[in-house]
Image 1 (cartoon, rainbow, N blue to C red):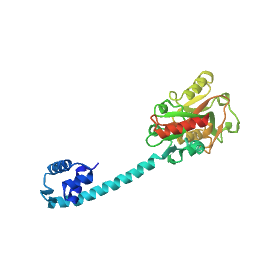
Image 2 (image 1 turned 90 degrees about the horizontal axis):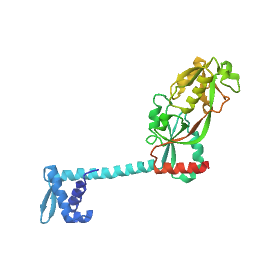
Image 3 (image 1 turned 90 degrees about the vertical axis):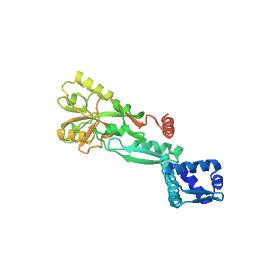
Image 4 (image 1 turned 135 degrees about the vertical axis):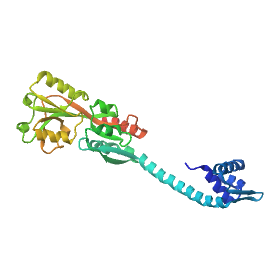
Length: 296
């Protein structure tokens, strides 16, 4: 903030009197005089000539008065601009979206509850599905994003965001359209004996670890190929190029046009829902309350 001694100085200069400046600023004459004495001491030179008939500005004071008027005017305009921006941000909900974490499920919810949030506008913010940077994206929920919608079974993600489940996705297999299994309507683990199965490495996803346990115990004929903890488009590309089988989700069936997503004879599902800040603002809590009521 600017030095308030400037405001006192400008008032004194325009009124030609400490007492009149005090009336204008709703402070005491003594306070005005104290401000001006301290101001001159800090500057190291005189800006006001005092007399029994009032005050006048020195040459240095005249120059400082003109610049001070500009500073105060600029400050007032800056505060107004900042206030408008703050107001616009206050009534904005920022939703992240990507190929693997599309914002459509959020918009479906929003369309059912937005009558309770008529002041708010939605800002869609795209981000890239990159297994090296996704932790940073999730860490920015609360800073860059208010919400991201996606599957969330990651222990690393759940340390960085709150999560509200709105549904489940079925775990499936995906293969290239040229793969012998591509014509199957449904698959079992027996069907992929002798195949290379791409799935996330152990240690971050409870559901994926359960599937791995079953395969290692009962289906050693399946060769597991570890992927990074978090899929990106490169994982889908590698599945198609290597003619492997990919453990995937039904909601990702359209991610790669050269892959076919096939249901599996099992009951493995993974939760998806709203990821929101660990320390949510009041309007986010209000929104989550509306979502909970809608889900009942």
